[in-house]
Image (cartoon, rainbow over all chains, first blue to last red; front, side):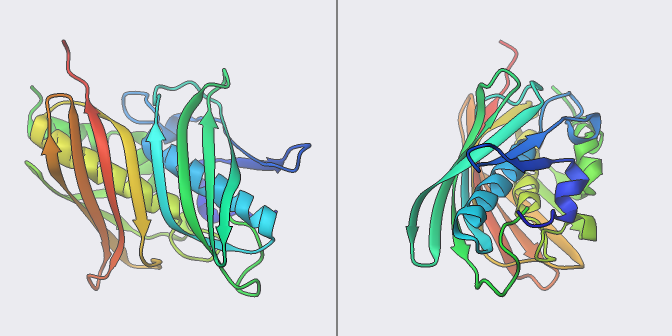
Length: 131
Length: 133
């Protein structure tokens, strides 16, 4: 996996590969990334899904990608972190790849799910992977 | 029912709102303009605005448009984002409008533009109104 972005660090994500070489994205919640009522901003899960699906595609193809579309469903935005996210590739056709991902809470309940369409960029554009 | 000022204040008091760096430029009933000065801390690995920021900004402006009109708290159920162009430097602006309002479910759409007016992203979201009863 390549280096992490400034926004990745700003939010406080952590990323690693598990024993099955899946990209695992983790978010240990801090007060500064919550809403004023203590709930989780949906944008946080959107960011997680964008990163984990894009990173997973980057890891599978060993090429960089850019997001074309993301469709996300949110099931529970109450604070039940820390959160973990993982994704998988569902389809590839030429330069277009479709992936899906989930965000799970500390009890491994799915709290958000998303699918996205990503465009594969030329390998020399940037290193593979994304965050 | 919350006043318009109270609704605006609740957004501005959100730690996450401040952490990303959003600014409310206009907050009228059903007419909201959200501004984001782009800082390097918001960049992805390609040196452009991270896609998660686009989605966060659209989600926020849709929620703001809904709450400014209904004065009722809401939670996002679904968001569908289309990314049209990358953003780098300067400011970007988000607007949102309600396209269907039911008693518990509201659908709204929003767009993100740069300083030249170029459209960067569009999103449509479904929100659940959190009513007391």
